[in-house]
Length: 515
Image 1: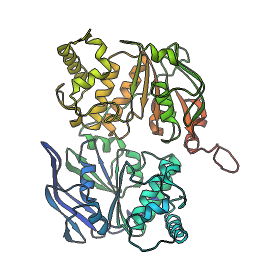
Image 2: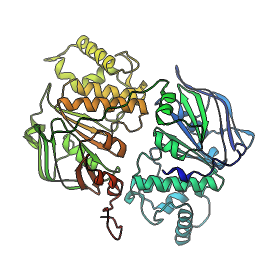
Image 3: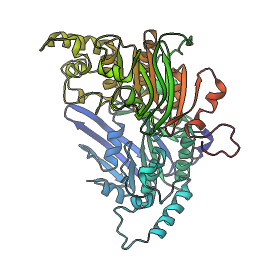
């Protein structure tokens, strides 16, 4: 997001449209927000920055009416307001776009915008024209007649934003808005947000990405352990490393770039012209000592690729060889113990772990083989191994009997990594392993994946371009189920065009059309 997009910094500060005063919120013994006071002003873009569990989303959920504070007051235009539901907040002109979109997939864009609007008999043609005009006004390109099920994740996000604009919201809150976007879509979003601010709206976005905060925000509030510890305006904001240090409370070590991959090593994974669901005619080779990143926006066939490689889907055609065995034999006779396949799912709460079980039981989900003796289980040994793992991977709280559901996203991901690495796997499939994690947890996950190159090959599926470029030896860009290109990290010409490839554009194409 180019810094030149921000033009509000030189303006005098307008009075706040919303003021949060002394907001506190607890969930049992955990204090998510502690006496927070925060001003949100029209014409300004404010970033909320903080580690996982710092209280950012909780605070904004309170403002959006989805949760209620234990103490404190929300003032709108200087007057106290009570929000019992998101409907109350919307009526006050406050709306939020969540990470998980709330759209009816069987309905069109225009129909989703009209849901809940009491406007009598609707004219579909007029309705679509109204939505089209609103989309063009803010540069949020989307077809009003298209069904949600047929839209990309970036287009769905635009629909969520248009829903708030259609309801005349003057405070728009976005939770991790760039997580599902390609680089060109991020630029498009930044321009739309700036246009909204220039028209007098207040924009708040929650982010873990330092660069986009520095480029776009007029104001930054840093949360740590439920409290605001720093606030800056544009021009006062420190550089990326200092901002990260303020967020986590200490200086961070830089992730050292990986040593160049030799191109040699045992072949651990071979895929030849494989098709599965929306994934079509894909081929790749992964060797020991290599990190191969499959980069692309969610919904372009990556999920089918991952599910095929971990045995959740059968290949419809083509050939798949895993650790020297064909697909059917590998999953019929899985490698138990060390040296097999490890899977780090994207959904760490729904698929990777059982939140209601303790850390030891979650550790045993994929490591039971080491502690089973016939029908008996060495529970004491499993608990000791869990304790050793959570200590090595710095998982908090450090109690093997703690419930997994009580862990933050970052700590839960470190538990999953420790559990999967316990078996010394030769092949690791990591699906968006840092999505939703703060900068500290992200860099720790990166270090673990880089260290795994010593004994394994890593297939990294990610929508984060920076992550792919930082970690991967080889990058494959996926769009609409196919690889647009596969190239080594050292190919600077290809790296410069990776954003276009993620959007389905061929670099240098005269017409600029999608491939």
